[in-house]
Image (tube, rainbow, N blue to C red):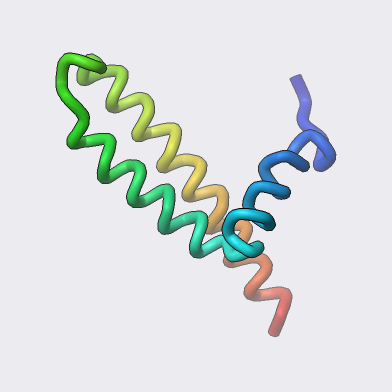
Length: 76
């Protein structure tokens, strides 16, 4: 499966609508989600599932921060 920019439109729209286009706000929300994930009842997820979900969220956060940094460099 290969993604095109148009495939990411729902994610981009979400960031624009819910975080007013502020990638740092989105990143902070991901940080909070990862933090809260550690306090869920242990019966709901195995340690492996919890680790995998946190990993996915961290990878998403890193990708967003990379985009933010590239955009910041282009502004100056």
